[in-house]
Image (cartoon, rainbow, N blue to C red):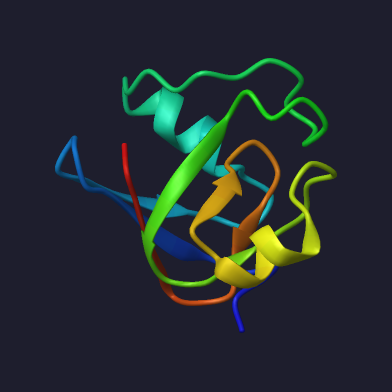
Length: 92
């Protein structure tokens, strides 16, 4: 389980693979790579950064998704959530 450590994110639409290091959010890495991702609160309470997960298991750290949505693992808030797997593939 990679909840606190490093992992990588593959952006399916952009064709980029981004390393995410401990202490860095997925949103920060996505923006640094020049990919536009909607966001607002950056703390997991607004839902603006909701992103489809195509593969991998997110570690949900938001306050938006219901228990049922979290179990499906097909959406995540990239401003605060991390990964339980070494790689996540996102619909960005």
